Length: 373
Image (tube, rainbow, N blue to C red; front, side, top):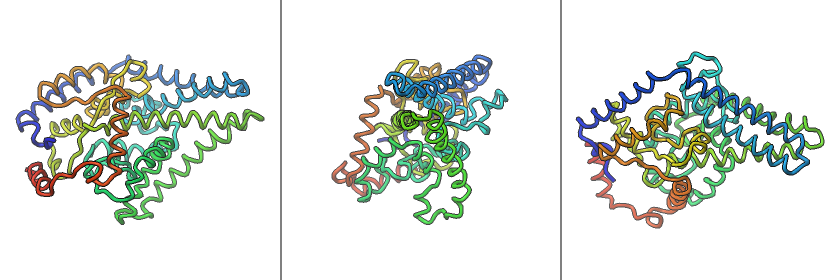
Protein backbone atom coordinates (compact mmCIF):
# COMPACT_ATOMS: atom_id res chain seq x y z
CA UNK A 1 0.00 0.00 0.00
CA UNK A 2 1.32 3.42 -0.92
CA UNK A 3 1.70 5.91 1.92
CA UNK A 4 -0.52 8.97 2.13
CA UNK A 5 2.29 11.37 1.20
CA UNK A 6 3.36 9.25 -1.76
CA UNK A 7 0.12 9.55 -3.69
CA UNK A 8 0.58 12.98 -5.23
CA UNK A 9 3.32 15.55 -5.62
CA UNK A 10 2.97 18.73 -3.50
CA UNK A 11 1.88 20.62 -6.61
CA UNK A 12 -0.70 17.96 -7.51
CA UNK A 13 -2.18 17.81 -4.03
CA UNK A 14 -2.64 21.59 -3.95
CA UNK A 15 -4.33 21.60 -7.38
CA UNK A 16 -6.43 18.61 -6.27
CA UNK A 17 -7.54 20.59 -3.21
CA UNK A 18 -8.40 23.64 -5.31
CA UNK A 19 -10.60 21.54 -7.62
CA UNK A 20 -12.54 20.10 -4.69
CA UNK A 21 -12.85 23.53 -3.06
CA UNK A 22 -14.30 24.87 -6.32
CA UNK A 23 -16.76 21.97 -6.50
CA UNK A 24 -17.91 22.61 -2.93
CA UNK A 25 -18.30 26.35 -3.53
CA UNK A 26 -20.41 25.72 -6.63
CA UNK A 27 -22.84 23.60 -4.58
CA UNK A 28 -22.90 26.10 -1.71
CA UNK A 29 -23.73 28.91 -4.17
CA UNK A 30 -26.62 26.86 -5.52
CA UNK A 31 -28.27 26.03 -2.15
CA UNK A 32 -31.80 27.33 -1.86
CA UNK A 33 -35.50 26.67 -1.49
CA UNK A 34 -35.35 23.28 -3.22
CA UNK A 35 -33.06 21.98 -0.46
CA UNK A 36 -35.40 23.31 2.26
CA UNK A 37 -38.45 21.84 0.56
CA UNK A 38 -36.70 18.49 0.23
CA UNK A 39 -35.81 18.11 3.90
CA UNK A 40 -39.21 19.38 5.03
CA UNK A 41 -40.90 16.77 2.84
CA UNK A 42 -38.67 14.08 4.33
CA UNK A 43 -39.61 15.25 7.84
CA UNK A 44 -43.32 15.17 6.93
CA UNK A 45 -42.92 11.66 5.51
CA UNK A 46 -41.07 10.50 8.62
CA UNK A 47 -43.77 11.87 10.92
CA UNK A 48 -46.53 10.29 8.84
CA UNK A 49 -44.74 6.93 8.97
CA UNK A 50 -44.34 7.17 12.74
CA UNK A 51 -47.98 8.07 13.32
CA UNK A 52 -49.07 5.28 10.97
CA UNK A 53 -46.78 2.75 12.59
CA UNK A 54 -47.80 3.55 16.14
CA UNK A 55 -51.47 3.66 15.07
CA UNK A 56 -51.31 0.24 13.44
CA UNK A 57 -49.87 -1.25 16.62
CA UNK A 58 -53.20 -0.41 18.31
CA UNK A 59 -54.57 -3.16 16.06
CA UNK A 60 -51.58 -5.37 16.75
CA UNK A 61 -53.76 -8.35 17.61
CA UNK A 62 -54.07 -8.72 13.81
CA UNK A 63 -50.74 -10.07 12.49
CA UNK A 64 -50.84 -8.05 9.21
CA UNK A 65 -51.45 -4.84 11.19
CA UNK A 66 -48.62 -5.63 13.61
CA UNK A 67 -46.20 -6.37 10.76
CA UNK A 68 -47.24 -3.23 8.86
CA UNK A 69 -46.90 -1.17 12.05
CA UNK A 70 -43.39 -2.47 12.70
CA UNK A 71 -42.41 -1.81 9.07
CA UNK A 72 -43.72 1.78 9.15
CA UNK A 73 -42.11 2.49 12.53
CA UNK A 74 -38.80 0.99 11.36
CA UNK A 75 -38.80 3.23 8.29
CA UNK A 76 -39.66 6.25 10.46
CA UNK A 77 -36.73 5.56 12.77
CA UNK A 78 -34.37 4.97 9.84
CA UNK A 79 -35.38 8.24 8.17
CA UNK A 80 -35.14 10.10 11.48
CA UNK A 81 -31.66 8.83 12.25
CA UNK A 82 -30.09 8.71 8.78
CA UNK A 83 -31.45 11.32 6.36
CA UNK A 84 -32.77 13.78 8.94
CA UNK A 85 -30.92 13.50 12.27
CA UNK A 86 -27.42 12.70 11.06
CA UNK A 87 -27.48 15.30 8.33
CA UNK A 88 -29.22 18.11 10.20
CA UNK A 89 -26.86 17.68 13.16
CA UNK A 90 -23.94 18.00 10.75
CA UNK A 91 -25.09 21.57 10.16
CA UNK A 92 -26.13 20.85 6.57
CA UNK A 93 -29.14 23.15 6.95
CA UNK A 94 -27.81 25.73 9.41
CA UNK A 95 -27.59 28.22 6.54
CA UNK A 96 -31.42 28.27 6.37
CA UNK A 97 -31.67 29.82 9.89
CA UNK A 98 -34.80 27.69 10.41
CA UNK A 99 -34.95 26.64 14.10
CA UNK A 100 -36.22 23.10 13.42
CA UNK A 101 -33.28 22.55 11.04
CA UNK A 102 -30.65 23.90 13.42
CA UNK A 103 -27.80 21.49 14.18
CA UNK A 104 -27.64 22.84 17.74
CA UNK A 105 -31.33 22.27 18.50
CA UNK A 106 -32.14 19.00 16.77
CA UNK A 107 -32.61 15.87 18.90
CA UNK A 108 -33.06 12.47 17.26
CA UNK A 109 -34.98 9.28 18.01
CA UNK A 110 -32.14 7.27 19.56
CA UNK A 111 -30.66 6.85 23.04
CA UNK A 112 -27.44 8.69 22.08
CA UNK A 113 -27.78 12.38 23.12
CA UNK A 114 -27.34 14.73 20.17
CA UNK A 115 -24.89 16.98 22.00
CA UNK A 116 -22.55 14.07 22.85
CA UNK A 117 -22.77 12.70 19.31
CA UNK A 118 -21.94 16.06 17.71
CA UNK A 119 -18.63 16.07 19.58
CA UNK A 120 -17.62 12.45 19.01
CA UNK A 121 -18.81 12.33 15.39
CA UNK A 122 -18.75 15.82 13.87
CA UNK A 123 -15.52 16.86 15.53
CA UNK A 124 -13.43 13.79 16.41
CA UNK A 125 -14.40 11.40 13.62
CA UNK A 126 -14.61 13.92 10.79
CA UNK A 127 -11.46 15.77 11.81
CA UNK A 128 -9.25 12.73 12.41
CA UNK A 129 -10.82 10.32 9.91
CA UNK A 130 -9.09 6.92 10.03
CA UNK A 131 -6.06 8.18 11.96
CA UNK A 132 -5.41 5.24 14.26
CA UNK A 133 -5.47 6.21 17.97
CA UNK A 134 -7.16 9.54 17.15
CA UNK A 135 -10.33 8.58 15.28
CA UNK A 136 -12.27 6.64 17.93
CA UNK A 137 -14.63 5.27 15.27
CA UNK A 138 -11.82 2.91 14.21
CA UNK A 139 -13.12 -0.09 16.16
CA UNK A 140 -15.38 2.02 18.38
CA UNK A 141 -13.12 1.17 21.33
CA UNK A 142 -14.21 -2.49 21.29
CA UNK A 143 -13.25 -3.94 17.89
CA UNK A 144 -9.99 -4.50 16.08
CA UNK A 145 -10.64 -3.05 12.60
CA UNK A 146 -7.10 -2.21 11.51
CA UNK A 147 -3.80 -4.07 11.53
CA UNK A 148 -2.22 -1.05 13.22
CA UNK A 149 -4.21 -1.95 16.34
CA UNK A 150 -1.96 -4.33 18.26
CA UNK A 151 -3.46 -7.80 18.56
CA UNK A 152 -4.55 -9.02 22.02
CA UNK A 153 -6.37 -12.25 23.02
CA UNK A 154 -9.38 -10.05 23.79
CA UNK A 155 -9.83 -9.58 20.03
CA UNK A 156 -10.59 -13.27 19.53
CA UNK A 157 -14.12 -12.14 20.34
CA UNK A 158 -14.14 -9.65 17.43
CA UNK A 159 -17.04 -11.38 15.57
CA UNK A 160 -19.08 -11.64 18.77
CA UNK A 161 -18.48 -7.99 19.71
CA UNK A 162 -19.39 -6.89 16.17
CA UNK A 163 -22.62 -8.92 16.24
CA UNK A 164 -23.61 -7.43 19.60
CA UNK A 165 -22.74 -3.94 18.36
CA UNK A 166 -24.96 -4.44 15.30
CA UNK A 167 -27.90 -5.69 17.39
CA UNK A 168 -27.63 -2.89 19.97
CA UNK A 169 -26.10 -0.21 17.77
CA UNK A 170 -27.89 2.78 19.29
CA UNK A 171 -26.65 1.74 22.74
CA UNK A 172 -23.14 1.25 21.37
CA UNK A 173 -23.15 4.77 19.91
CA UNK A 174 -24.41 6.09 23.25
CA UNK A 175 -21.70 4.33 25.29
CA UNK A 176 -19.05 5.33 22.73
CA UNK A 177 -19.19 8.87 24.10
CA UNK A 178 -18.00 7.69 27.53
CA UNK A 179 -14.57 6.87 26.04
CA UNK A 180 -14.22 3.87 28.37
CA UNK A 181 -11.01 2.71 26.69
CA UNK A 182 -9.37 6.06 27.61
CA UNK A 183 -10.60 5.73 31.19
CA UNK A 184 -9.06 2.25 31.39
CA UNK A 185 -5.74 3.62 30.06
CA UNK A 186 -5.83 6.43 32.62
CA UNK A 187 -6.09 9.11 29.90
CA UNK A 188 -9.51 10.27 31.12
CA UNK A 189 -11.07 10.29 34.60
CA UNK A 190 -14.53 9.19 35.61
CA UNK A 191 -15.10 12.71 36.96
CA UNK A 192 -14.67 14.07 33.42
CA UNK A 193 -17.39 11.67 32.30
CA UNK A 194 -20.02 12.93 34.74
CA UNK A 195 -21.52 15.63 32.43
CA UNK A 196 -21.58 13.18 29.52
CA UNK A 197 -23.13 10.48 31.71
CA UNK A 198 -25.89 12.79 32.95
CA UNK A 199 -26.97 13.53 29.38
CA UNK A 200 -26.90 9.82 28.57
CA UNK A 201 -29.08 8.88 31.54
CA UNK A 202 -31.63 11.59 30.73
CA UNK A 203 -31.86 10.66 27.06
CA UNK A 204 -31.91 6.89 27.62
CA UNK A 205 -34.66 7.25 30.23
CA UNK A 206 -36.75 9.29 27.81
CA UNK A 207 -36.30 6.82 24.95
CA UNK A 208 -36.95 3.75 27.09
CA UNK A 209 -39.96 5.44 28.66
CA UNK A 210 -41.39 6.30 25.24
CA UNK A 211 -40.83 3.01 23.43
CA UNK A 212 -41.18 0.51 26.27
CA UNK A 213 -43.56 2.14 28.79
CA UNK A 214 -45.71 4.98 27.41
CA UNK A 215 -46.76 3.67 23.99
CA UNK A 216 -47.24 0.04 25.17
CA UNK A 217 -49.35 1.32 28.08
CA UNK A 218 -51.53 3.35 25.69
CA UNK A 219 -52.52 0.16 23.86
CA UNK A 220 -53.83 -1.42 27.09
CA UNK A 221 -54.04 -5.22 26.87
CA UNK A 222 -51.90 -5.15 23.72
CA UNK A 223 -48.97 -3.67 25.66
CA UNK A 224 -46.70 -6.74 25.24
CA UNK A 225 -47.31 -6.77 21.47
CA UNK A 226 -46.68 -3.03 21.23
CA UNK A 227 -43.49 -3.33 23.28
CA UNK A 228 -42.34 -6.14 21.00
CA UNK A 229 -43.20 -4.03 17.93
CA UNK A 230 -41.21 -1.05 19.21
CA UNK A 231 -38.24 -3.29 20.08
CA UNK A 232 -38.40 -4.82 16.59
CA UNK A 233 -38.39 -1.39 14.94
CA UNK A 234 -35.38 -0.37 17.01
CA UNK A 235 -33.63 -3.61 16.04
CA UNK A 236 -34.27 -3.04 12.32
CA UNK A 237 -32.92 0.52 12.59
CA UNK A 238 -29.86 -0.72 14.54
CA UNK A 239 -28.96 -3.38 11.96
CA UNK A 240 -29.47 -0.98 9.04
CA UNK A 241 -27.43 1.85 10.56
CA UNK A 242 -24.60 -0.54 11.53
CA UNK A 243 -24.48 -1.97 8.00
CA UNK A 244 -24.39 1.42 6.25
CA UNK A 245 -21.79 2.89 8.59
CA UNK A 246 -19.46 -0.11 8.63
CA UNK A 247 -19.67 -0.49 4.84
CA UNK A 248 -18.67 3.17 4.49
CA UNK A 249 -15.59 2.85 6.67
CA UNK A 250 -14.26 -0.71 6.92
CA UNK A 251 -14.20 -2.56 3.56
CA UNK A 252 -10.81 -4.10 2.80
CA UNK A 253 -9.53 -1.36 0.48
CA UNK A 254 -10.20 1.53 2.86
CA UNK A 255 -6.96 2.90 4.31
CA UNK A 256 -5.90 4.10 7.74
CA UNK A 257 -3.20 6.58 8.65
CA UNK A 258 -0.66 7.45 11.31
CA UNK A 259 -0.46 10.69 13.25
CA UNK A 260 3.02 11.31 11.80
CA UNK A 261 1.92 11.22 8.17
CA UNK A 262 -0.94 13.66 8.83
CA UNK A 263 1.07 16.30 10.67
CA UNK A 264 0.79 19.81 9.19
CA UNK A 265 -1.80 18.55 6.74
CA UNK A 266 -2.89 20.98 4.03
CA UNK A 267 -6.48 21.29 2.80
CA UNK A 268 -5.65 19.17 -0.24
CA UNK A 269 -4.04 16.48 1.91
CA UNK A 270 -7.10 16.47 4.18
CA UNK A 271 -9.33 15.88 1.13
CA UNK A 272 -7.01 13.10 -0.01
CA UNK A 273 -7.25 11.34 3.36
CA UNK A 274 -11.05 11.52 3.30
CA UNK A 275 -11.16 9.82 -0.10
CA UNK A 276 -8.69 7.08 0.79
CA UNK A 277 -10.41 6.47 4.14
CA UNK A 278 -13.99 6.10 2.91
CA UNK A 279 -16.05 3.82 0.66
CA UNK A 280 -19.35 4.22 -1.17
CA UNK A 281 -22.21 1.75 -1.59
CA UNK A 282 -23.92 1.56 -4.96
CA UNK A 283 -27.71 1.35 -5.25
CA UNK A 284 -30.88 3.09 -6.39
CA UNK A 285 -32.50 6.36 -5.23
CA UNK A 286 -34.57 4.69 -2.46
CA UNK A 287 -31.51 2.92 -1.11
CA UNK A 288 -29.56 6.18 -1.04
CA UNK A 289 -32.45 7.95 0.71
CA UNK A 290 -32.74 5.27 3.42
CA UNK A 291 -28.98 5.36 3.96
CA UNK A 292 -29.22 9.10 4.58
CA UNK A 293 -27.11 9.36 1.40
CA UNK A 294 -24.27 7.94 3.51
CA UNK A 295 -24.01 5.43 0.68
CA UNK A 296 -21.99 8.34 -0.74
CA UNK A 297 -19.60 8.21 2.18
CA UNK A 298 -16.72 9.62 0.11
CA UNK A 299 -18.68 12.74 -0.85
CA UNK A 300 -19.97 13.03 2.74
CA UNK A 301 -16.45 12.97 4.16
CA UNK A 302 -15.29 15.55 1.63
CA UNK A 303 -18.20 17.90 2.31
CA UNK A 304 -19.95 16.92 5.56
CA UNK A 305 -21.74 20.27 5.87
CA UNK A 306 -23.54 20.44 2.52
CA UNK A 307 -26.99 18.80 2.24
CA UNK A 308 -26.60 15.07 1.66
CA UNK A 309 -29.18 15.14 -1.14
CA UNK A 310 -26.46 16.83 -3.23
CA UNK A 311 -23.99 13.92 -2.92
CA UNK A 312 -25.45 11.85 -5.81
CA UNK A 313 -25.26 14.97 -8.01
CA UNK A 314 -21.54 15.44 -7.46
CA UNK A 315 -20.44 11.81 -7.16
CA UNK A 316 -19.61 11.56 -10.86
CA UNK A 317 -17.41 14.66 -10.72
CA UNK A 318 -15.61 13.45 -7.60
CA UNK A 319 -14.95 10.10 -9.25
CA UNK A 320 -13.67 11.82 -12.38
CA UNK A 321 -11.27 13.93 -10.29
CA UNK A 322 -10.01 10.79 -8.55
CA UNK A 323 -9.41 9.07 -11.88
CA UNK A 324 -7.50 12.04 -13.28
CA UNK A 325 -5.19 12.05 -10.28
CA UNK A 326 -4.81 8.25 -10.30
CA UNK A 327 -6.60 7.86 -6.97
CA UNK A 328 -8.87 4.95 -6.00
CA UNK A 329 -12.61 5.55 -5.62
CA UNK A 330 -13.88 2.67 -3.50
CA UNK A 331 -17.46 1.64 -4.24
CA UNK A 332 -19.56 -1.51 -4.55
CA UNK A 333 -22.98 -3.01 -3.85
CA UNK A 334 -24.10 -3.51 -0.26
CA UNK A 335 -23.65 -7.28 -0.23
CA UNK A 336 -20.06 -7.02 -1.46
CA UNK A 337 -19.11 -4.30 1.00
CA UNK A 338 -20.75 -6.22 3.86
CA UNK A 339 -18.88 -9.39 2.96
CA UNK A 340 -15.62 -7.46 2.85
CA UNK A 341 -16.29 -5.98 6.31
CA UNK A 342 -17.27 -9.37 7.75
CA UNK A 343 -14.06 -10.97 6.47
CA UNK A 344 -12.00 -8.16 7.99
CA UNK A 345 -13.73 -8.56 11.38
CA UNK A 346 -12.94 -12.30 11.45
CA UNK A 347 -9.43 -11.91 10.04
CA UNK A 348 -8.40 -9.29 12.57
CA UNK A 349 -9.76 -11.40 15.43
CA UNK A 350 -6.78 -13.70 14.89
CA UNK A 351 -3.14 -13.07 15.71
CA UNK A 352 -1.32 -11.50 12.78
CA UNK A 353 0.59 -14.66 11.99
CA UNK A 354 -2.74 -16.53 11.60
CA UNK A 355 -5.05 -13.84 10.24
CA UNK A 356 -2.54 -12.23 7.91
CA UNK A 357 1.22 -12.43 7.73
CA UNK A 358 2.78 -9.39 9.39
CA UNK A 359 5.45 -7.67 7.29
CA UNK A 360 9.01 -7.99 8.56
CA UNK A 361 9.85 -5.50 11.29
CA UNK A 362 12.49 -3.79 9.16
CA UNK A 363 9.92 -3.42 6.39
CA UNK A 364 7.45 -1.78 8.76
CA UNK A 365 10.14 0.57 10.04
CA UNK A 366 11.12 1.44 6.48
CA UNK A 367 7.48 2.11 5.61
CA UNK A 368 7.06 4.39 8.64
CA UNK A 369 10.18 6.36 7.71
CA UNK A 370 8.96 6.64 4.12
CA UNK A 371 5.56 7.94 5.20
CA UNK A 372 7.07 10.37 7.67
CA UNK A 373 9.37 11.68 4.94
